[in-house]
Every structure is written in structure tokens, then in C-alpha cells.
Length: 154
Image 1 (cartoon, helix red, strand yellow):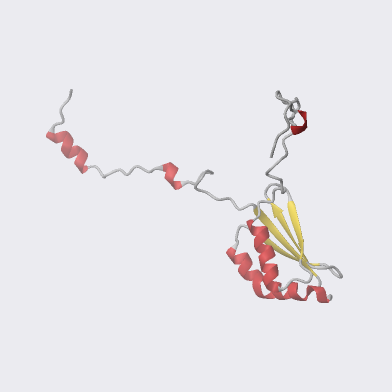
Image 2: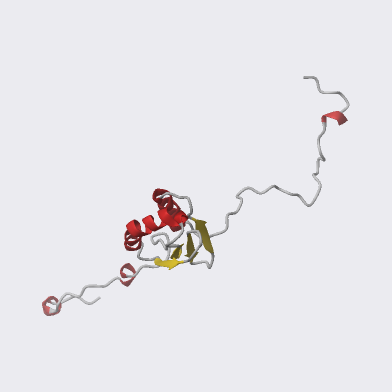
């Protein structure tokens, strides 16, 4: 085993210190530490003429810039549709879209609907509980109180 001499120690000390760069810590990878928002585009469609669009126009005038600034991952588009009720349409990363009608809603309710689109994943709504259907008959059979030798007394 080689021993270090004073010369090798001094030579090592005179070199500039090298810092090891950890590449894994500099980049983000998908996993439990990253969140990918699912909404990619919001389209507000409204009419300048109809009175059913009044609250939607108010929301757009007062809140649309703040919405776009607070959600830079979402493309916000305004479309004028003549003689139509107002809607907001959300497009998601999985290719699906959701449409919500805004006619008759106050600006605060419109903000709630937009938040619903922002927080949603775009996936279809599925029932979590499914009825169990068996392909084979039960081993014990179906129990019935009418088919026992001695009736059950309550």
C-alpha cells in the first residue's frame, strides 16, 4: 500500500478544489415530487349583444388577466360568438374537453366553474363501486329461510 508523501499532499493542496455537480438534483423528472397540470387551454366564448352574456362579459373584463397570469401553463382564448349563450371550454392533455354553460351565472359562480375546470383532470367520470356479477353459481347455493327443516323463530 502506497503512502502519501509530503510532495503529493502539497501538489494536491495547490490544485483548485473541484466541486462535484449532482446532475440528478438539477433537473426535474416525473415522479412524486412534480405536478403536471392537466388543463392546457381555456376558451371563453361570448356574445357582445345578448343580455345572457352580461355576467360573462363582466367576469372577462375584470378577471381574465389575473387568471392568465396566475396560470401560465394554460392558454386563455377569448372568442366572440354572435347570438349564442356564453360557454367556457377546457381542453386537457389526455385529448378530452369539457364544456360548461355560463348563462345565468354570476361572476363569482363563473370563477367557481373556471376553478373546477382548472382543478379537473379531464378524465371521464366513472363509478368507483361496481356490482359484483359472478359467472358461476355459489358453492353453498342461495340461502332461503323457507327451505329449512325447522322454521326460524323470531
